[in-house]
Image 1 (cartoon, rainbow, N blue to C red):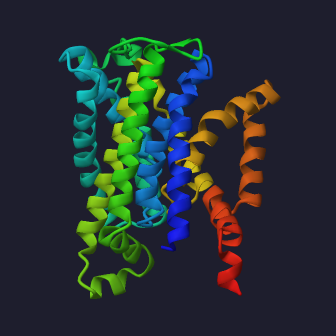
Image 2: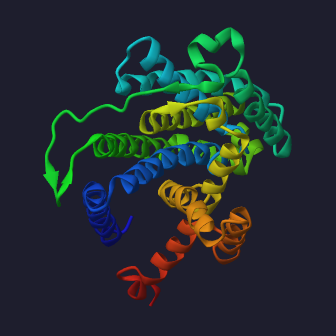
Length: 330
């Protein structure tokens, strides 16, 4: 990487982190709650992007792993008295195992066949969560109501109190940064190159000694683990889970976030999450009668103007306007 590019990226990253830390003290509680959900969705979108963007496997069932992660956190907090932070690794482990097992059908299925198989999972999970045999743990159709954790200390900044929502924002932000750093380390090295090789040239990758079945299954497991962490965080932030909280539309929404942010892009997950959280609200404000029609117009407009996602547009702009670009081109 060009040293100038590295310095600019480090500076922009530091400024962005400072802005994100100060952000919850500049807005009211409801906006803080929305920003919490943006961070949650960013992790979920990143998880699906590992599978779809970097490895080329299409999933329409990641809402199921989001649900498994959310219920893992809720059940552990409600019935085992586990602290909220301890539920995240448990949700990750559970979803990794389930995703790894789900990865085995992916060895024989591909493209739209795999998409339909995962779509069936997204359809089945909300109904399974209502099953009476496990109703004692899941709460059945009524779900589980949780209590938001209180901050370990309190203070005021910009005349805003450091309350439960702002504490959860800081906690969620820390987890988000950790997950993105983990994804960066995984995908910018040998593992990432192996995933892309399997996506683009599977026969050549197998010839080079890459174990295709194992790579595909582990990728599915890692992707599900990321989404499970997002689901657990979502349960803590919302303080409620129910089968109806995880409809099939959730899986489609996460996939929309991947495409909007940019396939095979780690930072693009943030842009996809912002779209997921705020565009439906904007569409509802524009038209109470047909908000989904307005949402569809927004989606079509984004795909027409930004066919490679937001990160694709930013990459092109950076390559054109970055410091020293004119000297290099000349």
